[in-house]
Image (cartoon, rainbow, N blue to C red; front, side):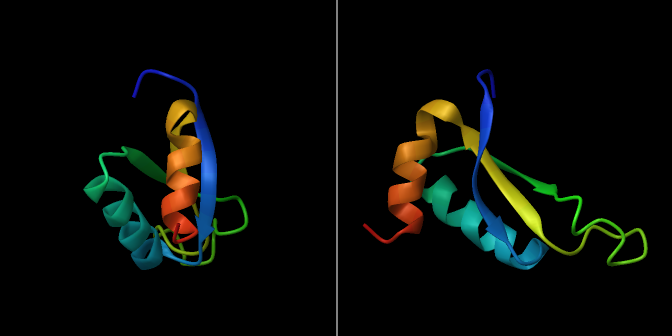
Length: 70
């Protein structure tokens, strides 16, 4: 990803984050997930807890439309 990354949504856990990322991927939108500070430490060193879903700034509007069900 070459441009600025912005948060499109938060997921409650890694499984939910991957479901969201799968939806975005089917529409050609690349994304990353990153554990939030709030989620850090909730799983004793494992990647658990709240996750940010990041997309390129130019994909943000379309990603929001998809996630809002429009």
